Structure formats: structure tokens, C-alpha cells
Length: 88
Image (cartoon, rainbow, N blue to C red; front, side):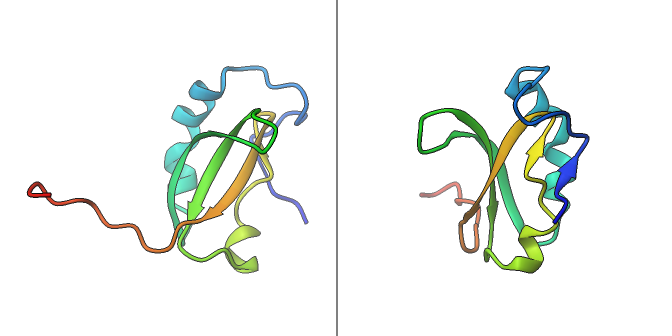
């Protein structure tokens, strides 16, 4: 399964993760089922790009790359996400 998007070797990120997020967030958010994308940490505390999805299904996950420009990507099931209103 190939899930690469403008990717370099996963072990050698060339740019800071915040720049990579900024340059690729629109294309990730355009994937159906994706609710958010942000910088987070993996289980070892290392930085990763986290992609929130409504439902973590094989159909959605196959559209999301394993890494972007060398930074690993983790898929997180978020359920539906709704904006907060101004009152609460």
C-alpha cells in the first residue's frame, strides 16, 4: 500500500514539521472524512503529523500518506467535529 505525498525518506525530514504542516494542511483536509490535521507526538514522544478522521476505515486511511516530507503521519479517529458556538 502506497501512502506517500510529496515524501522524502521517512527517517530524514528536511524541513521543520510546522512548515510541512502549513504547506500540506489544505490537501490533507480535502480528503473526504478528514476532520483535522495537527502536530502531535507518538507513543515515544517524537513529533508526528496527526490526522483526525470521522471514522478510521480502510477506505479513508488508504488516502492518507504514511509520511509527508519525512515526517510520520498517524491517523486518529475523532468522530464528528463541530465548532463551538460563541455562547459556550
